[in-house]
Each structure stands twice: as C-alpha cells, then as structure tokens.
Amino acid sequence: MSNGTHYEVLARKYRPQTFSELAGQEHVSRTLQNAIDSGRVAHAFLFTGARGVGKTSTARIMAKTLNCEKGVTHEPCNVCPQCIEITKGTSTDVFEIDGASNNGVDDVRDLRDNIKYLPSHSRYRIIIIDEVHMLSTNAFNALLKTLEEPPEHVKFIFATTEPHKLPVTILSRCQRFDFKRVTLPKIICRLREIADKESVVVSDTSLALIARKGDGSMRDSLTAFDQVLAFCGNSVSDEDVGTLLGTIDRRLLAEISAAIFGGNTQVVLAGIKQVDLVGYNMRQFCQELIEHFRNLLIIRSVKKPEEILDMTAAELDELNKQSLHITALDIQRRLTLFIKAESEMSYASFPRLIVEMALLKAALLAPLVPIQELIEKIKGLETAAVHTPSLPWEAARTVSVPVPQYAEPEQNTSSSSRPSQPDEGGEAVVVNEHGGEHADWGRFVAFVNEKNRQLGSVLEHGSPFKQETGLIEIGFPAGSYYLIAAQDTEFIDDVKALASTFAGGNTVIRVKSIETGFADTPLSLAEKKKCDAEQRLEDLKQEVEKHPVIKEAERVFGSCITDVREL
Ligand SMILES: [Zn+2]
Image (cartoon, rainbow, N blue to C red; front, side, top):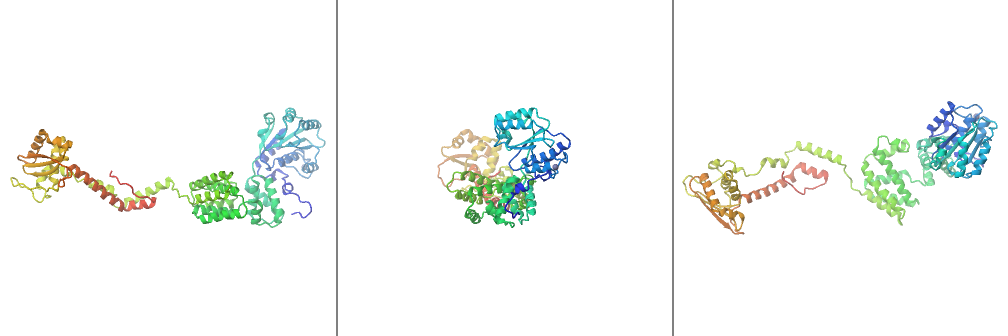
C-alpha cells in the first residue's frame, strides 16, 4: 500500500490499460481487436452494460489503440505520448464527455464544431460520451446529424447503462457491444492479483466476500476492497471483512440451514439471536437465507451448477456437502416459506418474530416422501411378498365360501357329516332344531335351485324347522314377501313334487309364519350365508393384521389398516 499522503483508489490505480487486462469482457475485446486487425472499424460504437464492468476503460483502450504512435495494432503500446495522454485524460484529440452533466443541445453543437477540424497530431478525433442516454432530445437530434454523415477522421464511442432510453435512430447507427456482469471467480482472481501487488495478506474467503459485495461490478468490488484496506491495513481478517461489509458469516448461514433440515429448533433460534445481536438487519438476513437456499436448490437440481451459480470452486464444494442428504423438494418447500416471510417483513412491526416463525415452521416441516421413492418401496414390498407365505387375500380366495354342499346332491346318502342318517323306510329322525343340520337342507335347496330357480330362491329365505322323511316344515318371517309366496298352493305342490323326487316317497310340505323374536328359529340359508361372510371377514381382518408384509408396510408408511375388503 501507498504510505504517501495521496492514496490512489484501486479502481483508478488498477484500471485496465490493455484489452488483455480487461477482465470478464473477452467477447467484446476479441470482436474489437478483430475489427482493428482487419481494418474494419465502425465509426460509432455503443457499449452497454451494468456500472463498473469496464465500458469506459474499454473506450479508452480503444482510443489508444486507434491513435497509438506505434501504429494501429490490437493492443496500445501505453508508452508513446499519445497513449500516455489518453491515459491521463489530457489528449487534445480524445474528448471524454459525461452525458449526465453535458446533456444540452449547446454541448453537442460545441462538439460538432470541434470535430470539423482534423486531429492535431493523431489519426482520429475520438468522442467518448458516457451515460449517453442522459442527453436531451434536442442534443440527440444534433448528434444524429453528425452520425448520419460522419467525417472520416471521427470515431464515436457511447457508453450507457440504459440502452433502452436511446432513440432508435441513434441505436441503428452504432455497432453495439453488450458488456456482461463480471463473474465472481474473475473478480476474485483480479482482487488476488491486486492484493499480491499491494502486499496484502487476505484469505480467499475474504476476497470472495469482497467480490460478492461488488455484485458483478469490478469497480464496486475494488471500492469495497479499498474500504477493507482502509480499515484493516495490510493484514485482513475474515471477521473484520464480515463486520465491515455487513455480510452474514456464511458459516452461520450454513449452521442455521443445517439446523433447519435437522429439525433442531434450539440452534435455529440461537442463530437468529446471534444475527440480531450483531445488529444485522433481519430482512437482509432473510434475503441472504433465501439466496443460500436458492444456491442449495440449484446444486441439487442441475448437473453443472457452476454454470449457473456465481461462486468459487471452494464455495460450490461447501454447498455440495451441505446439500448432500437433502432433496430438492425439501429445499423448495422451505424456500417458499422464506420468500413469503420476506415479503411480509416489509410492513411488519416485528421482523425478528416473522423470521423466527418462518424458520421454526421450516425446521418442523414433516418430511415428504417423493412418489418415486414410494413406488420403489412398494416394489420392494412386492419382492418381499414372494418370499413370505401367501397373502391373506390369496388364501381367502382359495378357501372360498362353504356353500358348495349344493353341488352334488347324490352324495348325500353317503355323507358321514350327520350322526344319525335316516335309513330307507326307517323312522323319522328329528332334525336339530337349531339349524345344525343345514347340510341336508342345503343339499335339498341346491337340488330345488337346479330344477326351479324361483322356488329355490324362496326356500333360501326359509328356516328349516323340520326335515324328516315324509315331512318338511319351513318357517318364514311373518308378513314377508317370502311367506306369501310360500303359502301359495302351487308353490307347495311344486316343492312337494321336488321333495318326493329328492328323498323318494311322499313328502308333506308345511309352511308356517315366524313371529319376530322367536328364539329357536333355525337360520335360513340366506342368513347363514350372511353370517358366514361376516365371520370370514372378521377372520380375514385378523389374518391381515398379523401378516408380516402388512406389518412391514404399516411400519414403512407409518400407516394403519382402516378397512379390509374381500376381493
Ligand atoms: Zn502508444
């Protein structure tokens, strides 16, 4: 650093003097140099782009290149009188005008008078107008006349941050170059060069902080560096830079975001407290947190984040580590909360409270399982099921309903299910009054069903009170449709005929009405079927609850069974 009384600011001291020194605008340098080399230099240029990205520096380099005594080459020599005068701003053939302060028509008229004359001792008279969009309409009109028929010895270079404010008539007469914001690594690289030349000890972390402060502007970054050097001298500490530039320590941001993803509310609130203690603006903290989460999201979402994020390799590496076990979806959900909080803060009386609430909410968000992951889990369960006993519903399907006693009526004679089988012509045996002898009744109804569906369906709803040789007594609920149907003489005759065929010999059919609440009524086949189905479902439920695959599914999804249905 200079120890003299005069301190030259870094932006001026290290202003690029050649195209090769111009950082971050290689596309502009290359095109301009090609034009110079091929001798096709336009008579008016327009340099557009944000502040501090090198527009005016490029204009001066261009002026020197065109007027250098060593000849028009693609770099100025910077040692001849012409080059030195232009660098100092004392050249009589290069006019630098600030459009903001010399914006009147008179200024432009003066200019027009001036360029009538040939250059005094150089090739060209070069007019550089900075912030050209500030010129008045009349001034533009006056300028336009010159641009339409420019003298051979005159070159115009206009610079502006707001090209859209220029009249189309001016725009169409200029060769336009758009200057980019300078990327972070390029600014850091330049800061490192300067730090070395100035013998300043400073970490990469600090340089990154300083560079970020410039927000893509080399000049603003150098101004921030000036500020740091004025405060720290030749030895710069990370803490000082953080305090001085008012940026949140990235470690604190990383710590808070890790706590948010880890659901550690204690650390989250302690972090906010710390931010508040150092007097940091809560809204700005929220904005930095948003940017941090945006960076994490980009890291998790794209293959080449370095092409999108303006960050150093070390910073990218660090973010990568932080985002390792987080999904893009988890980041996105939290980011939404912060963005909402940030917008609420502009009119809030308690900004800290809003940040705290948003961050607590973010920390306590229940994890979402992406659909794809769920599908994978289900697939896993299916594979597991192959190796376990058959699923309950599959078992149920093969066990099936215990009604097929209908199936083969001729087997009834050899059936051993009945303790006392009536022998031919033997005495009547009293059938179990409680319906235990459903098998015989079932076989008979099945037989009837085969012959006459309509009769069978009525019988299915009847309670078999007696089924003896020569007598069948069936009860139906009083007042029911079935009772009326069964009391029909035609019905009785038909059933009688079928019963005779079924059992052999004459059978009396007796139909009676059952009063509700009559305790000893045997179940009808329809009722029995319903009972069996209920019982089966109950058994199925118990089996399902015990099954290892189901238990595992409940564990994986944190769910419970609400209903079991038979397929
Ligand atoms: Zn020169």
